Image (tube, rainbow, N blue to C red; front, top):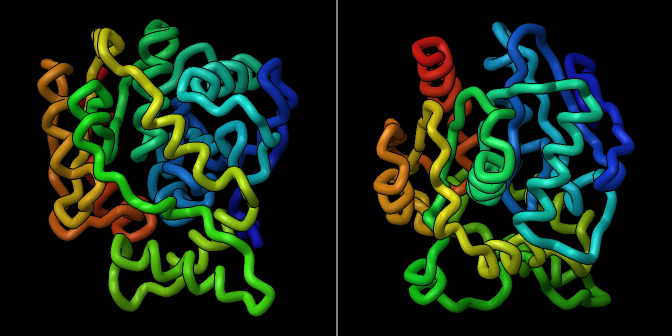
Length: 265
């Protein structure tokens, strides 16, 4: 259930029907979620950032309540984000992306750098040949075979639990819900990351903040490699942050992001 403070809406764009939630007023800040999540991972963060800004959090095309697609790719996601900006009349925005959302944000900054003011990349790896070669091979985290007795729901929970903070079953509940929305496409975001080529796409000249979370085993050690390719980037580290950083530690994230946006032009 969406709290009354949020404004959920749909936009029919050239890339498909997109669901988004917004709140606040002022300079626009767009938030892009990880896979296989939805705008909901920013539920706690949005009110903190909306004190000074108009915050827009879409479900990336193919996720959440946005239109289902068959052609999943980082490029496709980025084109849909740009299509949403056009539909909303947002010529220039600040952009925050977490994990998959950060990779999409890099692609947006490559395709249309003039549309961005400042860029925040959280838990975002540099997706090059080395990343693809060294990425651990594991069973799909978010795709399990349905069982008549519901055991697949427990399997989803168990596979993801090691990446989530102890004593936060509420966050795992939200993860499982988002996975169930995607049905048999729950792994398409991870496949899109594996197929992406970030080489030659990190020439964005504007201000960049990169955030690393020390207890995130998936992306923390990859973040410095991205910073190396964005010489203007500022790196900030959140101790104890895990994969669901946006939901787990919204106050810490909001403090870093607000400081960065206030200090840069």
